[in-house]
Length: 635
Image (cartoon, rainbow, N blue to C red):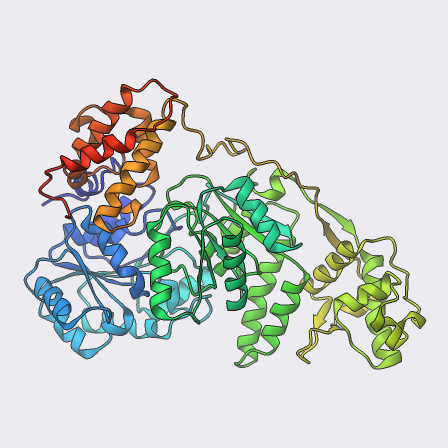
């Protein structure tokens, strides 16, 4: 029997398994059930793809988004894996062809959406073929406690009932201990073996900045740190998505919108362009991103506060799947807290549901306001202990805490006096105007200059007062009124602060340098630009060749090769097919398909004196592709 390790090397081009991959694969190949918690980029897909190739039959993969199945199948087909999908985008003839391939035993992997799998006709159809295993991807979707609940996943308990002898593997990159337990319970995986890897993504630098004209902050971040890079920008509303995409485009940065309000063909076209083009930015609501396999996303930016740490981790995890340094950047301000609190108060559902939402938000606010290592706190949320990383913003530029008891009393006292003396409630902006003694039209209208707290807050600036209000909200010492206008009211805990029984400490934002980080982080991870001077022009020539190959085949560039493979090719410069086989990511099929072209390009580059320009390489690339008579060509 072909071994898992041989399959890893021959098909995927890797020399050895990482972490617990070998143990997981051996367990599933042997017929065991498994629950796998592994970070994005950690190699989850190999844990079901290799058993699907080693075991007899077809591996059936339940994937939540049909929009991504084509790219997943393309990536496997490029490796010589016989893969297909069944979904509503196909014509009857296309579906019939796939069904016949499955029944004839000609498929290694078959992708299905959960909705289709639970249809009786689909189950009957699967019974007529040979199933190697069931893989339940994005398994956290089964959890109502988690951030991305999908009711259709609840029906997947039928896998255990209908096919009790077929191994099942449930996989996710995002699960707290509670979500983990719910996955096991709802999918009837009580006897499954659990594999929990570290949630740490050391190649991602986590940074949270005070929000101040966020679009301009984003533009500066992109221009100084990620020019020409592919990335994702998340916004809370559809309107904000549209405006941000338009703003970036007007400033010379290619950006596309993605949200549920766009016509389906537009969403599909924008997603396809993002996946296939290098350097395109997707501006999106959280409706975008699940299962995105694009490995070269160099940054994920949030212009609005995520609703939960799980959601934040899942979304930021779409950066740096190739293991190269990437950035998770979040702009966070007072209005985010007000907006999220108000949304919880107005949400549908019972009190228990609102308590869950509040717990999620409180954990996210604690991450934003911490003066400790961000990564340490993020990992602690998932039950993992870690040392300070030395590579997040709070490690690189430590924040201080300060005694904010007196400012807190002044702001809370203003809320009290407005309510007690005037029967009024106002938002943070007006409260700050009162404390700073500003004679605004509204202050004049309501004669709030008569209040005892008028003008007593001169020791702090407006941004500092906004930070006080934000952190009082985050700590539960101030609340958003349920009137829908964002006005602020006291909480049960406010009285202890006003009486002096409870001290309040706040985070003081450090002065931040606009200087772009160097080529090496404190944790020792090299930046993408750290190729040797001799290798850089070779890498660029390989990227140009890859773009040409991908365009001819109509697939994303990463389906041809990942950046990490091109970087290794540029540094090591193999001169034979045998040496090519030692390059990470060059499997048997890809070596046969692209080997002559790559070796020819590398030989041509060796004749060029470095560090001369790679101009002219386009001609050699064109010549190489013209003379290719590869029988595996997709033309």
